[in-house]
Each structure stands twice: as structure tokens, then as C-alpha cells.
Length: 325
Image 1 (cartoon, helix red, strand yellow):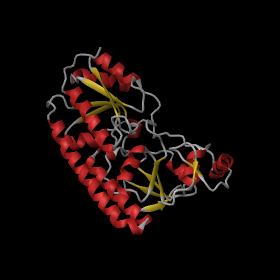
Image 2 (cartoon, one colour):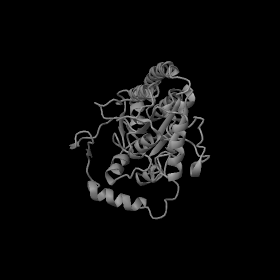
Image 3 (cartoon, one colour):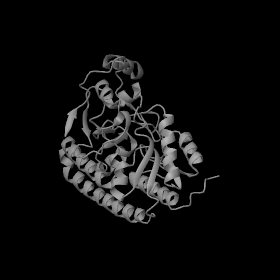
Image 4 (cartoon, helix red, strand yellow):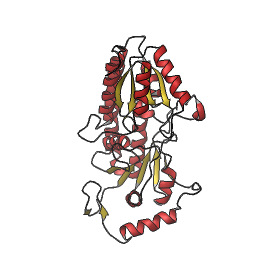
């Protein structure tokens, strides 16, 4: 379902839409008939295809699989960006002001999205988690709030695809059949990935199925494939780690003899390495969760991201508990 975003009040102390528009005019002189190309770094004529902006790179990959060549699809954030508390810029707003649709995850992931869409002029927005049954965070200040990382379940990701097909068909009715066909093909790939991950993770020993990460971003994946989950903080919006939480995680890793612990690429792994050292475990590497890698990296697409992560899980949890040097 499409909606016009950003109709709520701005948070106190944040710049108003008028201020952002003023900055935008200064940045692009308001009258230029061309747009700055993020890919080339130079000025180019406007592409005549409808323009879709996603809030982060994973959604852009999913959107491109559905859009084919009929739409321009760009991510507001770049590979490697921390998306929970992203601070958008006047150039981001300039790009959004010329967009026909903004694609967001929802479930409280993009804390900045409402302000962004308002500053961009209430661009129509589609929320891809509409229709997803959210898992709830079960502890601390976040208890009872939805876990937003539903794309980490290949099953839930297929609901994202359905929302994209609906939104793109409404935006460009002449392409509806193409979007439907592309969506069907992409969902088949996600179904194949689901079976692949299930087979791969079933091989983990029964006593070594506790997945310890920095952020609690693997709840949906753990649910789908019979893993347990423990983490340093529920969401990356948290600014610091409490000694109590860190000590509690160290004790659990010790008690359950967890062979390896992990972190995510968009945050520092320093605290998790300390957990590994104190608990006598290994640091098993960093997952891609909130962002893809660049095109030459191990997680250039959502499918690659999942395979990279599961490879790390298999290697870490199937190994002995000897600390990494």
C-alpha cells in the first residue's frame, strides 16, 4: 500500500522541512534542469524512467530484482552505512525530491525516515514489512518493540517482494506484468535459498546452535532454522553497552561452551572480541546484515549476504572452542 510519508510532527530540535528546502536551494540552485549522478559524480540529463529510492542497499537490491530495467533504483545510504541512526544530507533530499517512490523497511528500523520524506516533499512511500508478522524484542528498554530485521528470513523476504510488485505496478501500470514475472522469479530464488540455508544449518551439532552476535539482528533467521540467539544489544541504535549486559553474555558463552561469537560489519567489533577473550571463545568474523558490501565484496546481493553469513556460522559453530590467536 502506498502512502504519503512524513505527515507527523518533527522531533523537537530537528530542522524543519523549510530549513532543509533552503539548504537544498543553496546546494543545487533550485533551478537546475539536471541532477547530480551519484554513480558518476557529474551532472547528467534526467533519466526518463520513474525513480525509486530505497532507504538502504539491501532493499535496493531487492527492488532491482523486481524492477528490471523499467525503473531507476537507488539506495539513499551507501554500502557499509549504519542505517538505524543515519543522518541524511541536503544532497540526499535533492535526490529524493525528484523521486517517484521511496521504499522503506519499517518496524522502526529507519528512525530518520519520517523526517526525510517530509523534507523531500512527502514523496509516496511503500513499507515492505506491511504484512510481515513481527517478532518482538524481549528485553530491556526495547521489550515489546518489533525486531525490524525481517529480511533476514528468506520466507519473510518473499512478502517484501509482494509489496514491491504491488507498489511498482501502481507506479507504472504498463509494467505490471513484467513486475509480476520478475517478482515470481525472484521469489523462486528466495525459496531455493531457504532450502539451502535449512540444509546447511541442520548440520550444526545440537549443542552448538547458539548464535552470539553484537546486534540482535538474527531473530528471524534463528527462528526459521532452529538456532538460539544471544547478543550485546537489541538494535544498533543503542549508543553504549552496559557492563551488566556484557557480563551476562560472557557468562552465557562460558556456560554453553559457545565456540565462536560474531559481530556485524556496520559496527565496531571491539566489545565482542572482548567477550570472546573473556569467555575463552573465538571471534568468528563479521556478518553483513544492515548493508551489502560493495560490488566486489562477499555480500553484493541479499542472496550473497545470506550465503556469506551462513558460511561463517557453519565455520564458527562447528569448530572447537579454542580462542582465536
